[in-house]
Length: 105
Image (tube, rainbow, N blue to C red; front, side):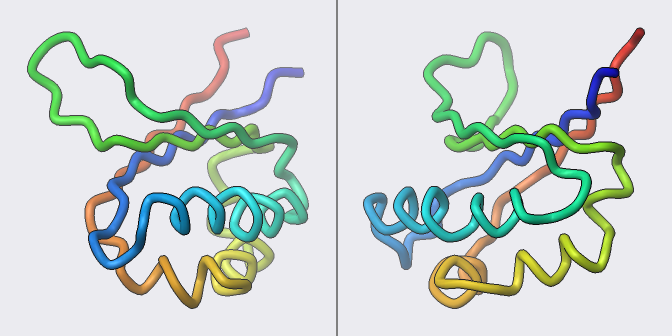
């Protein structure tokens, strides 16, 4: 069975150093989300090149989830409000977008 992909695109807030942003994403935020039922994997990327006229944020995280509804679950909502990420980064996040990709089987 293929999983739905949830792609989160964001810019690093000016108030947070690049080192802290990446450390807290990797060590706090992703582990919290991987504990949510229905989340099967996560991988982060930094945009290298954009072809065309898209204004794409610098960072991208892709989560393998059961469905688009996983993100609205109580467990997901609780996870995004825990840990250092929630305290030090989340309050400063501005520019971010999400894209949900359903498999074509």
